[in-house]
Picture 1 (cartoon, rainbow, N blue to C red):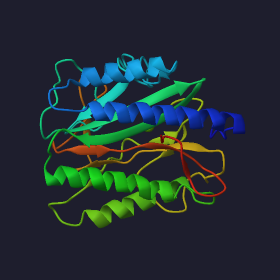
Picture 2 (cartoon, helix red, strand yellow):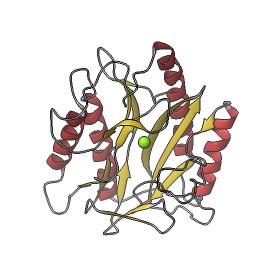
Picture 3 (spheres, rainbow, N blue to C red):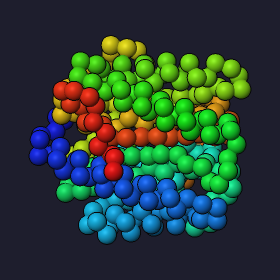
Length: 261
Ligand code: MG
């Protein structure tokens, strides 16, 4: 069931998104050679607690999971697509790319955001992968308008990514088994928002809907595998992956990015 948020909830979600973006950008600024992924996680948790809020992912147990997620921040390096578990012995190296994904609960409501950043100097293919993924998110956001459908978002993202990945050297796989989602009263709500699909299909977008759009693009195959830790998704071919996400409010006019400072 798609939940339309009340004006009071939207006010809280706007503040929640601002707090989340503030934290995530601070965590991004900590990304450097020699830093462990656990340090990033603990820093995110500290900042969230200082604001009087709660991390959404810590101890979150998705359907089918054996154990609750053991961290506040998902940190996914290089061929890790999403849901990487931070570790004290996972040290960032020059040339890595790191996806950080965070959810915040503020006054009982949730927002969700992710970005991918370079560690030091990274190769041009990785820079391009990150840029195309971030642009794909913006393409999706531009479709998040009254009268459009969930399918219009996926369709636009897919067409854009295909237009960018025409040569074998620059092939982008759109991850299909993971998707965006409604968000607000819970971290994951309806509707399910794939990053591919058919125009004019799926749920209609109406004012007051709050959705997380989150393209995940791989430098090779779209196929992913789940690590034995039960959470971390890897690209099936070991190539790199990038992920960008914003929480968006559907309005009568332009889409509003809630996860912004
Ligand atoms: Mg999400």
